[in-house]
Length: 190
Image (cartoon, rainbow, N blue to C red; front, side, top):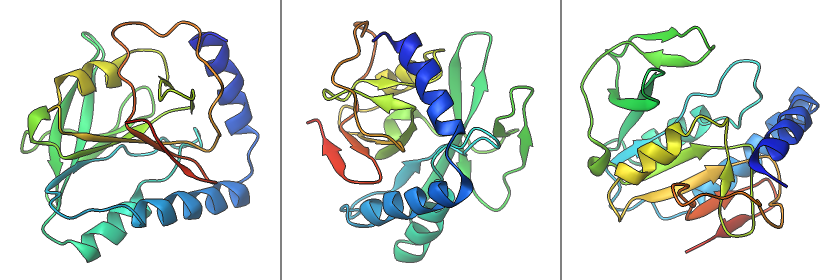
């Protein structure tokens, strides 16, 4: 299937999940994140789940990692829809957030963080294939962002679904994930 066909199908599948199932899946995702090695990590980029989109939760992970490694810095992004780029900010107690016109909670400013400073990026997605190619929302924000990161950055996708066999229209600009966590297992693509 193509990315667009998969996007339509998996958006619908995700919307059909009830809140109890989503909470159960989020607990499973968190459990697998907790099993990963976080030593030596200084900057972690996370996404803020969109209300109503039933995206996997990242806030429980943030709370857990802050307790485990209080020195870790969290980074979140603001989307520039004119050029489909993301601007990254340190997320601290001074960060002011607002919902943009697309329903995404974003920082309105703060301390900028360059992509090459990031050690780990948690990546939102709808579904991935068995090679680590992902289907997102179709604007290419994350592919552009990940292409600018250091070659040593660890990319971890979070999804409620198991991989499809193959995405038929993967492009040369698409950035594969290194890891993807589903409710049943962690997939490693490196």
